[in-house]
Image 1 (spheres, one colour):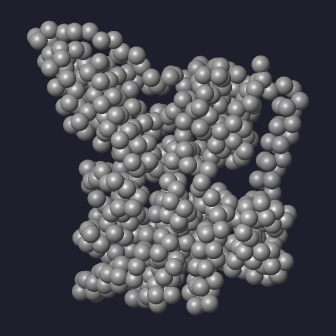
Image 2 (tube, one colour; image 1 turned 90 degrees about the horizontal axis):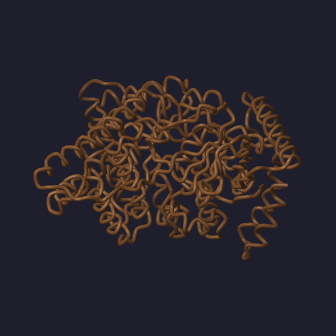
Length: 575
């Protein structure tokens, strides 16, 4: 029987293949009583299972460190290790076994339920979602105790057209599945920033999440069509539908091949306006993708990924080598290094703080200023690397001029210590600020007097302006980049910077989405920064754009007071 499922598309493209169902994660456990003499043995059995899972996580961490996976995985695995080592899970389970004389599996599941009940009381949506991580860790420990295979089973008939269908995937599961060449991912749970979404985008394969019942409705080896662009799944399509999607798939592949021809062509509009297309990276290894895309600089080096997936902090020399490597490989092209944006969902191991609102708490530049020693080490490393290329410093999450002044004082102090050590660096290194808090956008004139350039972070700007948690699936429909307030803020920042003759770039998800390219060009943006895989698609839009035709339409879109009118104008703009 053929039917259609609708979810959230998180990675574009079309995949055609056969379903491979991941084993259900949920495990049923028995409840039985033990004698007092068996308590120590039962606790030892539990501790052994914890040790086995810890070894598995650490082995996966090693593979991440060795560069076999993207940096984002390390952050998720790091979180699971912290949950595994949390006394509220292990020691509390010891007490349950001893006090109630029950088996370890039952005691562990009871403790898990208590923790989940506590998570349900948390108002912050992001922290509530972390209960899924607790469940995934507990289930892995249960599998170890119950003798389930240590490695995820994969069907012997698995082929290159296999599409992974799962209820949910933990980071560790994804790491183990990653060695197999799946052509797409589907999950019942998830959001734009879920584990599966991240791996799908890093592998550049179609993916759809939030399908709710896909794992129950789809059978092993069912024929599937995955439309990652529109979030549509077609199960057991008939011949005519299959032929139609194969044709679409071929057309998409042809378009990709055509785009590759644009790599060495300068990004210039039809009326002769040059546009800078930069790349976002997390680690030095990403430079190869940057070169393949034809990017003319690094608009955002997310330095915090150097701090994740480790028990210690990266020293000055280690950071210097990472920054220097990127600067050298970019051959004097701009390299903008954002100071570590730690906190919220990207925390150091052992330094997790349960805040009521982590996205609004001690993170980014606030954390840097609160940890001056750690900040000083990073600033010295960046300054040392500035000798080897056009390196720039970017300050994340600015909200007031005081934070800029404090940061500039830290930079000057770092410079002086390097002078004292007779170490050369760029004395005139440029310092910019990220505009991702509405307060920063609304007090721009004051901030610009202290900064050399600006970078708009639309992901957080939208989240904070609309009061919408961008990783909460229940309010995903309210996360709207086309909201009039968002367009007004972006326009205000770009036009204010242009009038002040201060360079301004945009490095959020909007920069890499082709439906926004002409809109941003019409507002006056001439620097885009995005993932390398998105760059050629955006360049293609730029090459076909004529600013004198675009600007009048864009002005009407920004002034539009009704969503339908705005949508009509946007369609006309992109046609």
